[in-house]
Length: 135
Image 1: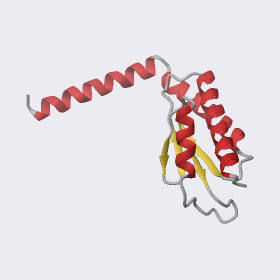
Image 2 (image 1 turned 45 degrees about the horizontal axis):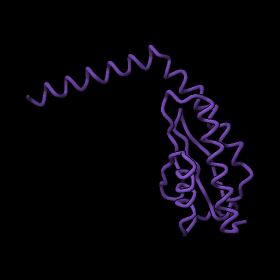
Image 3 (image 1 turned 30 degrees about the horizontal axis):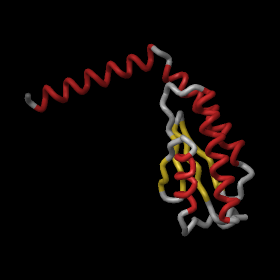
């Protein structure tokens, strides 16, 4: 099979998936649910002194952590990894990127599922902060 044919097949398949996403309303749902997810995540984590910023677009959201909000100093230890690992133990997958964690739920995620992700994230941060006596 020549490379050109493979590229054409890939383009055709990509176009189909975009059509399905539009037809099923997944793009609009992702925009609305993503805004909801970001708002809930920000509200749940706002009181934590180690949370520097919650940001995102669509269904992708990131929580930046800092050891000092005033100076925005980065953690030099494995605190963020510990939070991500704790979330995994509680059943929610996140990824550590530097001093942040990222979550990107599927476009089909319901608000109830997003609520669970927010609750697990906040609980995991609470647990690690308490265990490590971070203030």
